[in-house]
Image 1 (tube, rainbow, N blue to C red):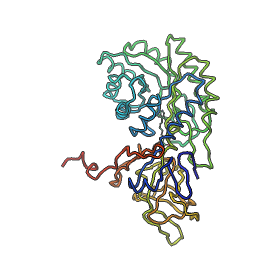
Image 2: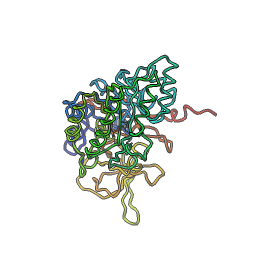
Image 3: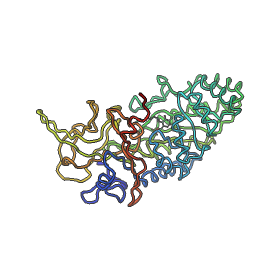
Image 4: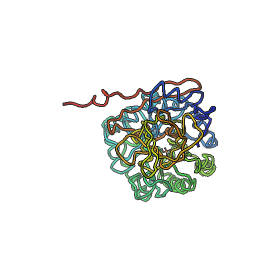
Length: 417
Ligand code: LLP
């Protein structure tokens, strides 16, 4: 069971901060994402504390959770943003993030997205290929601007994590090869509309072993020195995100301090401004997905199913990455049962838990799928004609609706006969 300061039982009832989840389920309906504001704030402070001895700038990676109120919560704490598309840039700006605190990443930016980011005045665009640098150069020229760019390096470090979320390996599409850097720097000398401001990496997500960061940072620092000798005064080194969280209490995440202990001394010595782009670390354990048990059934081989009103359309992580999420009763019964918790979607991969010991809740009662703050709402879809859920943020004893549930009308609003 995942019990925290933010989601905890008071007697038999599961609360978010000082609000009963049962009440929220009745008031706002289900499925419902519920976020603890205090958890967001505390995670940000914990990250900042861990790296406080190192001059750095933290850019929340909004792809993990781009709900405007979530982005705004971090922006109000002074945090910047890492965005991966024109859409995320729009969201960050709408949430009130100042452009000078936004970095624009992405392996395939379109010319109009490049133009949008340059016109907005973002801190930097991270380039991932020679062709992209030429495109940014062209667009900047058309706009009469000098584009601040960072080069995303692929350090060829294969971090141990799910294969779909490892990004620092040469097999993957991301970044520029280390070996290519001298040629890229030479080319930059011929592209006057570009100003090189940084080197960048992101080696993957949910990485437990700090040594992968150390190995990749050694390479990034060598390239930083090479760039210096070639006459480039680089201001920023961006180490990316990927810091882990605990989904399964049996597999606790490496504390962020272990990463800081290894990385801060190396980076401090380089005398450069460091950027971090945590996503999951800041948000994953701040939200739950609240869902109601529609039906219970047992089949002829004695398998027990809890059919709930949320599914892979609201949390695709178990289907896509075989990831573990705790499932907890909103009202504890005491006795337990081994069951599959499954959704209403017509796919066998539509499950939250398989053969899991959970509280023997009744039909009509609520379950909380834990750790749904990162890569849940943002990856939701309308598959099977599903309506995206409402979202609520809790602050102490107060709950605020921050996103309305989609309507049937919205499902078809962009279609024409
Ligand atoms: N920076 C870049 C360039 C990224 O591509 C990502 C994540 C991050 C930062 C933030 O990584 P984090 O700190 O959240 O690990 N949907 C998958 C995760 C995909 C991560 C994609 N890139 C999941 O649900 O596990």
